[in-house]
Amino acid sequence: NHPDLTTRLKMQGVCDLLQSSIGYYDWVGFYMAHATEPTLHLWSQAGEPTDHTVIPFGKGICGQVAVSNQNFVVDDVHAQDNYIACSIHVKSEVVIPLFKDGKNIGQIDIDSNTAKAFSQEDEKFLEWVNEQVATIL
Ligand code: SME
Image (cartoon, rainbow, N blue to C red; front, side, top):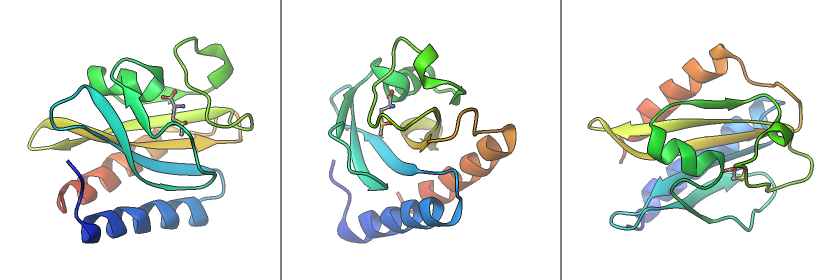
């Protein structure tokens, strides 16, 4: 399930804009579920490149959100045991599921080098971002 080029470029634009305009959004990416396999795939990202471009459902914060369908706010990543570290600088993280026609088809993942960076306001804002992105999918 590869996105077409236009979709990929638009989602890249969203990542770039969020990462460059919000100081504590150090890494921004969209992980999207494979059409048939229980894996998440990194479609676009802004910030340091990561080796974790494919994440199995259930693994890490992202993999947990793929099965829970719930927002996951992590104030301190070091306090999590089911966590996949992408950078030693990351201190907190938020993952918000992206729904299309009521189905959890992926997520936006934001890492911050600041501890406890994400508030309910970020959650509401990122839910809205995902709703906008869903309209082009
Ligand atoms: N920390 C995530 C993995 C993705 S990286 O943050 C880019 C996790 O635990 O699922």
